[in-house]
Amino acid sequence: MAALQKKLGVVQELNQEISALRSSFDSIVDKYSLNVKAKLDELLEKLSAKSTENEEQPLPKKRDLDKVLAKVKRLKLKPEKGRMKDIEKIQAVLKDLTSIFPVK
Image 1 (cartoon, rainbow, N blue to C red):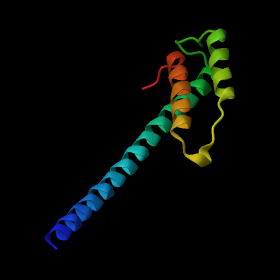
Image 2 (cartoon, rainbow, N blue to C red):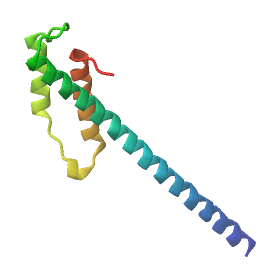
Image 3 (spheres, helix red, strand yellow):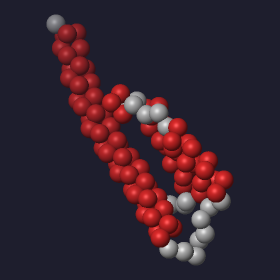
């Protein structure tokens, strides 16, 4: 009987820890999502500004623009599956974009 009580105590503690882990995961995903969206928004803003006005920073080379455009077009994402590999693809393209258009 005492062994069963100990097991139940561990199960209850594990349940609490998993609940806390789930909450932390939600917070991390939310924060990550906000960060990526902010970078994408900043890129969109920079691209809009570049196309409408002549800033002190010139546009990147056409070759670099073509290269990153091709990568964006080749993206094959399946958002409905919620897969990590889709996030990794987006991270890779975002890295390429920010290499030619630096963001915060």
